[in-house]
Image 1 (spheres, helix red, strand yellow):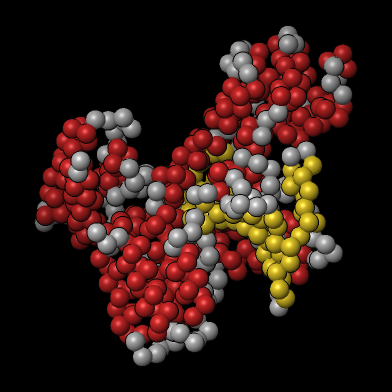
Image 2: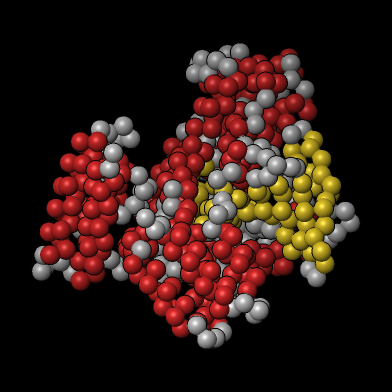
Length: 489
């Protein structure tokens, strides 16, 4: 059976032949090779939103610099490989290998006398299991005082001429700033072959700071994120909004036994004494010298956990909710929101990676055809249009985008079901049908059959609006596809 990737690869091979010997040839060949590469996900947001910290949590290692050094002003790619290396791409010069060290588990890159403005991008190759399925791109903060640094993020993700090299974006926000809206609107387009909100996720970052570091901070953050995610203006920009305590997430996946030992000293205090000690960062650093923690150790705990993380971790140890360092790391990662984000990335991005990569490639071919007309380019344009129009995953993305932009509307329960059936909450059959992950095949088949009948009726009902009827026919095809998959041995 010919897959979407196969059809897209055929289109790209034809494009390479048509544009052989032109300035576009190398770009098209690179796009064809990109089909076999991991998904590219950019992490973007305003200055101090916590981008590098979250990226480290996703990788499981402290690779991205989190201070205000030179490297934070450079677009940096983190990819899997067999060797450890850092390469700098320079303007009008060959790439240069850079020296690096790891101190206290954190990567420190030596630019070797290069200024940040001289480096167009850094590529960090690092053998890591998390990077086998995805290449992560760390971007300079939007709204930076250094205009050139902020401009690099715009040029990468919202280029004027070529397609963006990122297949999807995780956008961090501490609240919905006007600059966030401006950037995400620029990244948005309602056409399936262009960037759209269906390949953007919003993260309410530094979520533990919303309730001033109280133990119920994440619960407050979830309520704020839910309100943001339900806002029609936000729904037009991103698929979903999740709260994540990035610092806690990074620390959880890189937790050490020494840190757990230090936290146990706090956990061994009487509850009232521990609460008094953790009233503020200043009090934590300076009071109770008999605790057995030096000022350096206390500051290090604050740098790694934040006041919220110290409170939460010590409370969990006191209540025996986590007995070992491994247990504590797992619990902290889950409570930080990292698990929810990873699950969402898997269902919305990784399971849909072929569709996202093919869309990026077809966008590029269409742009090349519009830019330069050559013998054979008309038939190439027809091929692109044929693939985009006939591939069902693209039709699902088009309807998802229409739902987000308000083009498709209806009763709330109908719209919610439509979004699920066409994969808005994840591409797995049980997610589309809102059933448990361990649902039996007969239950899945029965639910899919009921959904098929329901959407057939809506599509054929003369009272259904034209836009909803078009979307209903896409939902019918999605249900038929689920039933076909379930019927296979």
